Length: 311
Image 1 (cartoon, rainbow, N blue to C red):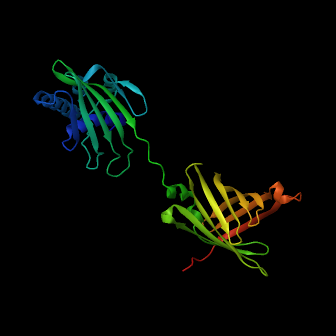
Image 2: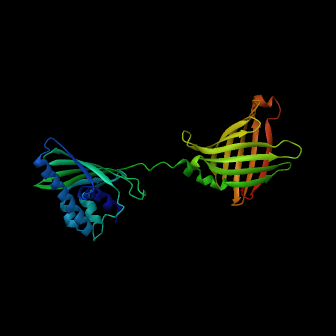
Image 3: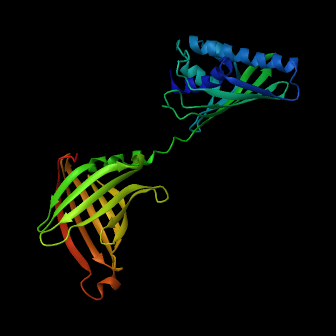
């Protein structure tokens, strides 16, 4: 079914389905009000039947000549023009078993004007995002007709922290890298229910004490970026933001050593394939930490390969 025709049917499904919660408010909530409510429901059922059979003439009779429809994107259509253009053949619109749940209220402004306000969820499978609609029903020559239908799409749900980090899932697992004078072991895994990637590393070089540390990678909702926090076993720490650059990931970090020396580094992670990535880094001390000496830190390039998983 064409999306616009489905959206135009939402109000009818809402009133026609016995499972829908309808609230009627107004000054006259007696027998007469109930009768008018039933009359609006009857008009909705007629509209739905016409939609299911593709009966353009019957549909046109249930819209006022000046009736208009505004879809969720803000486009405005004259209902008669839209129906003449699009309802040209029978189109089955039987309500599916997992149809979105709809709740609406019907409010009588006058004896001849009723406003329906409703909300539709995303459906049983959660595929849709739902939204709101408002319909104006008017009584003309003892018949209830649609005069206006407005729809507003609900904002799609924000991705979860885990979904934000999925592009970096290739970092997970055990890795080993070698430099000229050291071996670097890195173990990466999800933590805190998948909200973070935790990376534990240790650097081993001949004739010196191993240096280790931990890095946590997560989503910073304020900055709207992936962020990492680093802590090493010598008391240093740092934090940086990640951005994608083609096939690489670039991380610009601010670091501070245990004795207060500050530096800025830029590291690039370039995945070669599922079993290998290249890490390259450059950096420099800040002016005060450099103390007038060469502020640049030695450039580094290390190839990491997957190692066997720990048991």
